[in-house]
Length: 124
Image 1 (cartoon, helix red, strand yellow):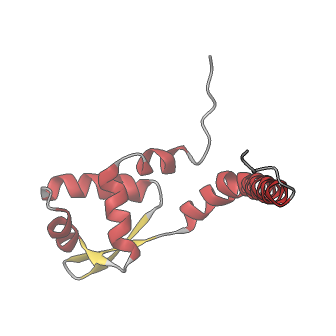
Image 2 (cartoon, one colour):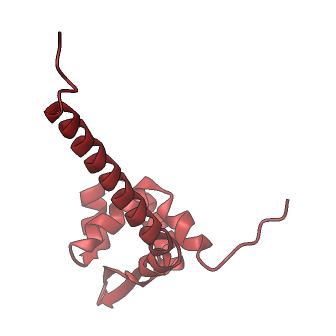
């Protein structure tokens, strides 16, 4: 079987790792220096640097140099691309399915209450 790679594969691969998702969660609150990320995550510096490199390669993180300090910023554009291509495509069908479920439950409840009013639940 020949699987075709697409331009979102590096993003999915970056998001597949829980350490990298944690870094993105931290950066969502605002830019952080590399040392601050190391401290927040509690991992070795070289591990955090390796994860940051994967995130940069996927375009999820950008780096701003401020003298010797490297400040990491979340780039939400690749996540928006995933949302647009994958999540939003299913969102309408999920919404329709939930509305259908809501209507089914409401109809069943009305029928149940109606049966009770007509003596459907009487014992004896």
